[in-house]
Amino acid sequence: MKMLVVFGILVHVSQHAFGVEVYEGVESVLLPCQTSFEPDQPTVVWSRYDLTPSTVYERDDVGVILTDQNQRYRDRTSMKTDALITGDLSLTLRKPRLSDSGTYTCTITELGFKERLAAVQLQVKDPFPPWAKGLVAVSVLVVLAVAVGLFIYCYYFRTVPQAEVESGVESVQLPCRALVNLLQVSTVKWTDKDNRKVHVYQDGSDQPEEQDEFYRNRTEMKRILLKIGDFSLTLKHPSVRDTNTFTCRVYNREGRVLMEKQVELKVKVPQVEVESWAESVQLPFITTAVLPEDVRVEWKNMYNRKVHVYQDGSDRPEEQLEYYRTRTVMKKDLLRTGDLSLTLKHPTVVDTGTFTCRVSREGRLLRKKQVMLRVKDD
Image 1 (cartoon, rainbow, N blue to C red):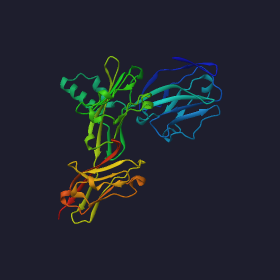
Image 2: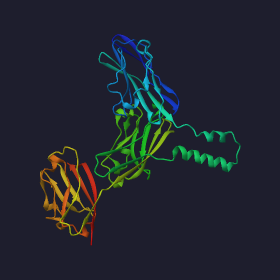
Image 3: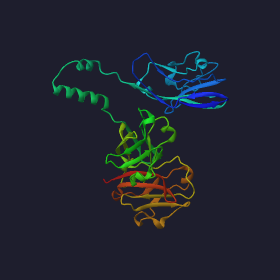
Image 4: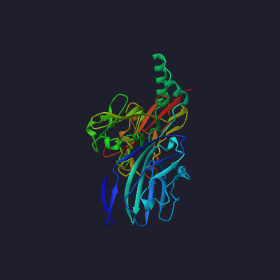
């Protein structure tokens, strides 16, 4: 507990992240939140920041406020009618579902002063299969016991979360939400299936020097999410080479693994097909980003040869491979519209392959997209 002075009043504020576990199907679950003072014209908000809108329940000294409440919690949340008098701001959540698992934050606002009172980690678990309970009481052969153990393991851990994006997006998020006491967490490590270090967070800060060079400057863990036990990783400029299985491990100060989760990422490369006698074909790349005037846009083929270059407001045909010269076109207003698509004239089977567009500024990559072109020969 810590003590704060708010408008001359001594306030107790919990520093603990509560953990509450419950099985799906129970009548209700209580998320605890207490305060030891009686505020003047207060507003209490229960939030879940991984949702939009994030408000789970809100009330002031007049009554419940439903304006911004997330629809999934409508008619399922309540607080005691005298909560703002007694200081018991605990939230009752009726008929908890598996999708209700997450971190719930209790915040109170008084005359513009906002203070977080509690963060509660709720885990709604799948009920243990009823038929399996009887097996526990039965003495069986070792082989059967092992088989049952494997079945139960598969029942609970058979799936790995998957993230699928198309080449060209700005970033992708790999989810990892903690079901542990946040006070025990010292280190978070993300690795890929080759055990390369993707991102390391330790003792309150990132450790970029420990990253593999392939992921350097492309990863981020949001500070605001770390405070509520969300260790999800943002991977910038994903390409087909990032298709992988990523593992998030959370350690305590003694180096013991508190939690481990895996995420499978698949980065798809869009495919374009065209007949060899076609007049032209377009390799699509649309971005919503506002691009500065001094960016460099560079299309290359699968052999890393320059197909088309645009920089400082104009094309650079002198940098093109001669094979593509006079055969490529980009739109004149591409920086304003964000349409970086490339038109390739008179495609032949020789043009079949993967094309990559890189958007950079002063050597720093801003966007990247790959497109697979297949030219069919009759």
